Image 1 (tube, rainbow, N blue to C red):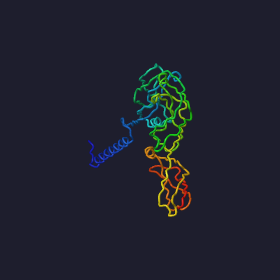
Image 2 (cartoon, rainbow, N blue to C red):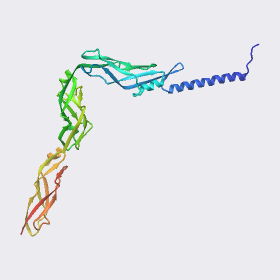
Image 3 (cartoon, rainbow, N blue to C red):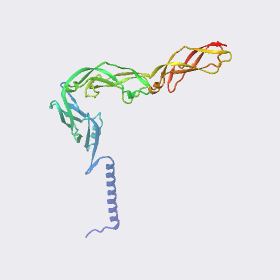
Amino acid sequence: MPKKYSSNNILLALASIFFALILFLTAYAANSRSGGSTTGFGQTYSQTLENVPIDIKYDSDKYFISGYSYEAEVYLTTTNRIKLDSEINEDTRHFKVVADLSNLSEGSHKAKLQLTNLPSEVSGEVSPQTMSVTIGKKKTKTFKVEGIVSPDQVASGYSIKEIKTGVTEAEVTSDEATINQIDHVVAVLPEEQTLSANYSKPVTLQAVSAEGKILPSIISPTKTSLSVKIAELSKTVPVAVEITGQLNKNVSAVTYELQTKEVTIYGKQTDLDKISKVTAKVDVSDVSKDTTKSVSLSADNVKVDPEKVNVKLTVKQK
């Protein structure tokens, strides 16, 4: 005889199915938020790693390589979150991106990039899959070092007085063709610097052609100190005396003698070019006997040194 089900049993069954469905959807949403994708009931984790260094294998005693990228991008996937975290961390990472050039001859090549030492359960892809590289016979030569400061890096109203470098020569290693193009080594002031005061800091050395083109090389030492002395733009001009005011009623004439006949003016070149002399205005209204006056000097848009001059006044009585 078939069993009979009450309406209460049917409602209970439907409620059980409903809550099971809610639990499943909640678990699915949690997995989606974790950043991985689901495969069946398992979790797949993925991570893209940028700026992964490339380990280049070649005969460094015989060859010099250039024209290549130093870093690549790696995409990792795994179902093991712990192993993925280990590979993400540079300090605990096992895998490497390798370019094996050991079987390549001199010249330009496309070298394949490979992922090595990937842990089990972890798969990966590297981008790009190849890199361009130039292989040349290694050569080392010594070149003179020059300090370089662009005129645009000197503040208005200043000029370069002296440039010195910590070393006068540097040893440069490159391939034979590049070594033959190198003219000298430069210690260049960083482009973000604008000088209005003396400068002295270490800078990176670069090998350049006669036209100033930077050429690929290894330089020893890699850095040296660059010292730059800066001076304000200046010009020496004569001092002219201008007598002002009314003579005392008992004085018929006043003559003068400058104790300082020339001064130095400082400023922008355009302002310096406009000035041929500095005038000392001497008021003789209160002069009734021989005296010496200290007179202030000034000129448009420039600084005058000294700022004052002494003027000796000789009086001729009526």
